[in-house]
Length: 254
Image 1 (cartoon, rainbow, N blue to C red):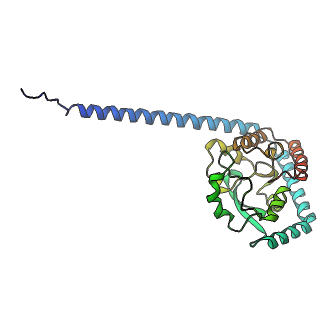
Image 2 (spheres, rainbow, N blue to C red):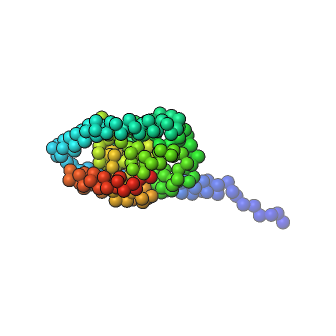
Image 3 (cartoon, one colour):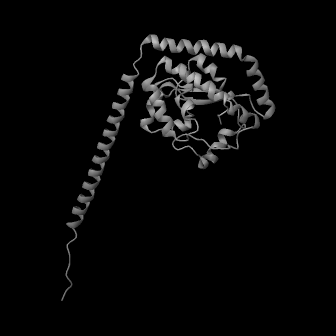
C-alpha cells in the first residue's frame, strides 16, 4: 500500500496570505496608534498655546525685567565674576568659562555660558558614566560626580557657576525665569510629549528649581515646567525670583 500523500502546493499560498494579512493588520494598528498619539499631542499643544496667549505688554514687561536685571548683574557683579574666573583657572587646567550647547526656544541650539566646574574632558567622560545616571528620563545626573572639581563643587552649591548666564539673558537666548535648557544629547532623547517645553524661552531659574530641586524625576520637572507655561504671569516670575534667592543662600545646589 502506498503511503498517503498531501498536496501542499495549495496550502502554502494560504499560509502566506494569512501572514500577509496579519502583518497588514499590525501595520494598520500601528498607524492608527501613531495618528491617535499625534492628534493627542497636537491637541495638548493647542491647549497650551491658548493658555499662554499673553498680551504684547506682558511679553515686553518680562523682557524689560530680563534686560534691566541682567545688565545690572553683569556690571555690579563684575569683581566677583573676575575672582571666580581666577579661582577656576587656578584650581584645574582649562578655560574659566564653559559654553555648552543647549536646546533653546523652538529647539534652536545656543551656547549656554557657565563657569567651568568640571574637568576639561567632562563631556567625553559623560558617556562612560551614563550607566550611573540617577535621573529618570532623558536627563543625566549623578551624585558625587567624579568630574566635578574642588572649586566647582563650591560654585555649584551656591549656583555661582550660573552667573555668566546673565549674558545669555541679555542676548535674549534665555530669560531670568523659565524651564532650564537641556544639553543637546539629553534633548535628543526627548519623547514627543516633552517638546512643548521648548515653546518658551528657557530660564536661569524656574518653578522646579524652587519647589522640587532635589527630586530626581524628569517627569516631575516636566510637569512643573508645563504648569509654569500654562499659568505664567509677571507676578509669578517675581515670586520665583524671590524664592530663588532663598534657595541659593541656603546652599542647596549640587
